[in-house]
Length: 168
Ligand SMILES: [Ca+2]
Image (cartoon, rainbow, N blue to C red; front, top):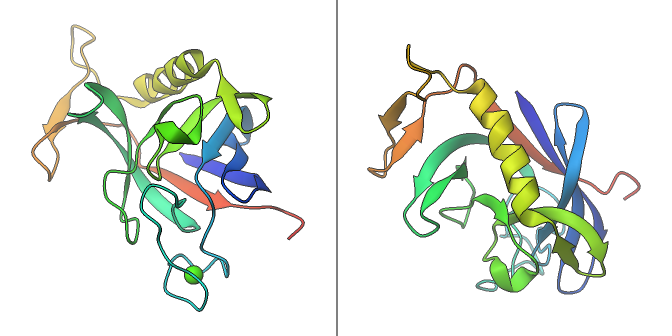
């Protein structure tokens, strides 16, 4: 499965985008400020630097697993192999104060903010549930992720591409 975040509004302190499941537009995303200015997947180039809790993850394509987040106390999608970052999740949130590089989901009904995040996270996790491997009783099978937490067994690999804006 291929997911996509298309960054569309690159603002001085926040970034609004669109979240796609395959080709299907599901809802909006909100991230911190984009600092991977040359879009090469790192924050090492001239003029680039990571400012803690104020930096969006670099552009790129990342594997996604669904892992139990000890901090969030629920199963959430986790991006693997993000340069300069650890524990990048996709979860609900209203404003970038809720994110330290994580990808927030909701509807961009107000400038720089999201609403309906709880609904959007439910929709997203429903999609992952459809992909999950279940036992005879319908319970999702899990394995132990490399960080020691439980993760869902998925019937296919899931990848997410962080891209955009199309016109730039
Ligand atoms: Ca870069």
